[in-house]
Image (spheres, rainbow, N blue to C red):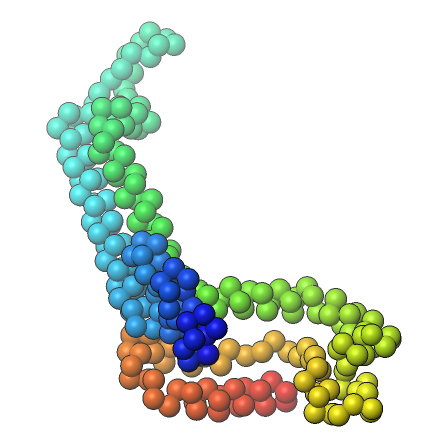
Length: 245
């Protein structure tokens, strides 16, 4: 259960201090909508990202069309200017035209630049979340998987060295006994709880059901709630056996 709100805590849930309660399939707390994104509203959050991206693309199109129409009205493509270095009149190039438009239409150009930048940001943000769904993970879980990958990539040797050090002295065997160095004077049941094991293989993601099912569980979460717990237990056992082969 949750130690903060004292309620039963299901798998993949997390207590949010800002919202003050646990959130099922916690992804992240979004400051844009001032609420946690989780199992019940993840699909609506994705819809929010998609519609915001479409709105920004539409704004980019309208602003670009408006500025282009104004440039045609001014016939700016045939404009000339006096070159301060040579004193001769020259046809304005693209860079000079853009400078003129930014100087005389700063509001429209600023909005256009903002809509383009934010549109690109929203595109990649939505793509990132779709990528997480395809992998069967969340933003919160991805951070934890990153820590696991770091341990397996960089800290495995350190942990093995730590085990060797503890196995060479009485203090190490007392604090962290390995299975082959159990103290025969103590009850095995007590010592088993102290055994620290470091699996040689990276643990599997038991929540990755395949791309199609992963998306189905996000967009139709309540249709998959019944039987999910038992299914995860069976899948975990199956993946564990498969990894050990």
